[in-house]
Image (cartoon, rainbow, N blue to C red; front, side):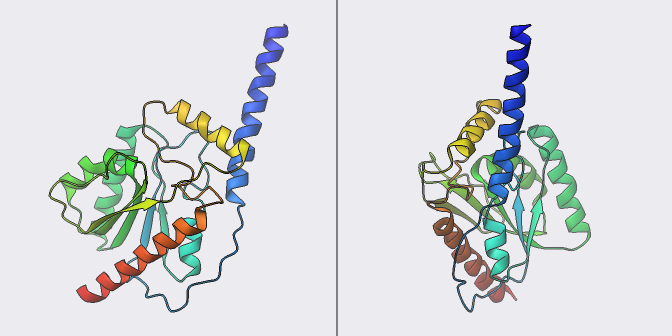
Length: 220
């Protein structure tokens, strides 16, 4: 009976930790003066979610999308299935084919692991809707992922590292990594969830967006 009560208490605690940590990240506030006169991209920016779990499922990219939207960029999310690689690849295939059929265009933003995971789909389809790829990577990652014979402009954005942050958010993310053991998942700082670096990394992404806008302008 005591063991059952202990297990039940542990389960309730883990559920509370997961819910609280996801809500805490979603409610992050940041003070930033907008950069004036940003050149805007012709095509929207599409943020692709990486692998998720109960401990990390909400607001995958944290402040990045809202930061760019506040500067006038058109931002969308592609929420792929949580963790099954085959399902994620299948969903991406369906999405890309539908975007090609609708004659839409976008700039894709995703983390290093997701680019590696989804590369076979991108390489096989070579979708016309895909105008560029921006890989968000940790500074200490082994090497950037590069599409073989890349058919679109691609750049790796190496984010600033930080181990600072909320103890409970970091604990929840450690459990997230444990559930997805064996996958080289990005750090919280890479995903824009570390307060010490989130604005600096967001500004790096803003610079990338302006470079994409210049590219769009040149290509007409």
